[in-house]
Length: 352
Image (tube, rainbow, N blue to C red; front, side):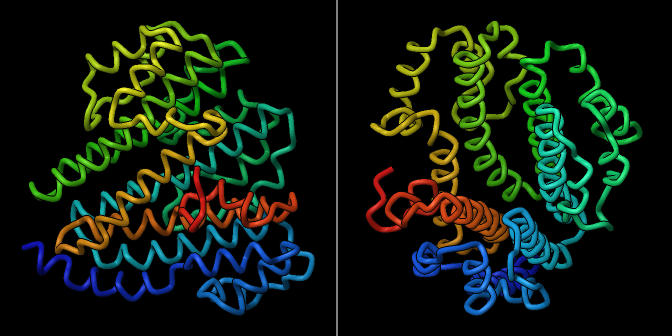
């Protein structure tokens, strides 16, 4: 099937859906809200989130409940697009869908690592039932991380996480999260290679940039916070970067912290450290913002290939993250001037 035929319908559908994305003006108005209930009301009365909020009693709505409704909306929009794909393309987008299941696993692991009760988390998972491989009810009965991992027996995640139960507690969560992320990127990279040649190359390029940045972030965290040996750092990096091959990444892993930062400052990814703001606080947001504007550009070009669909689903995901940040800002009484620093999108006047 030729690309023009394959993507004509999906690109038309995405143009319609893209018109429902929130604008900068929407976020400016959201920052004027004084409570979570007021923010939910704005979304229901003024945006397409009305479809997920119209039957909800938003009086005294809890932050986590609203966040899960927002995620449900994003997954609902994403699911609409799956019907337009078939063959290896559908398998790729189903694989990308897996990110949300992995994020649920990370949430469970973080709560358990703090010794908190995870039983109520089952009510805050919104991964579509027809795509699930996880038994959330069984997972939510886990009393500790070891039992949680055992309750994953029979799933693709069991063999990934089981070996890390032998790691020392301080690094356990770090090891598990990194390996889940590595598994995710390995999976979608492998599936991306099965696309038509042109789409495969484009997917490989923008996935490679994401891998570059994640490797740099993970190496930095491993050096600064976990004092990992170079060999350990190498074991947790992802192959297939856009700019850096295995030899480059290996070199990064053997650097001291100051030398590592200096090397990154002399690269195309210097924005990670070239700032007067708190590097650690804003690093992940800078990575997301870099990728966000990459996808904005891909969407604007609007070619009959995989880029428009990839751009839209990522822009939708970043909108969700910005809504989470806005909800958090309102909880802590931050105004637009302060709160916009934590957004992926760049609202006029933001300097971080």
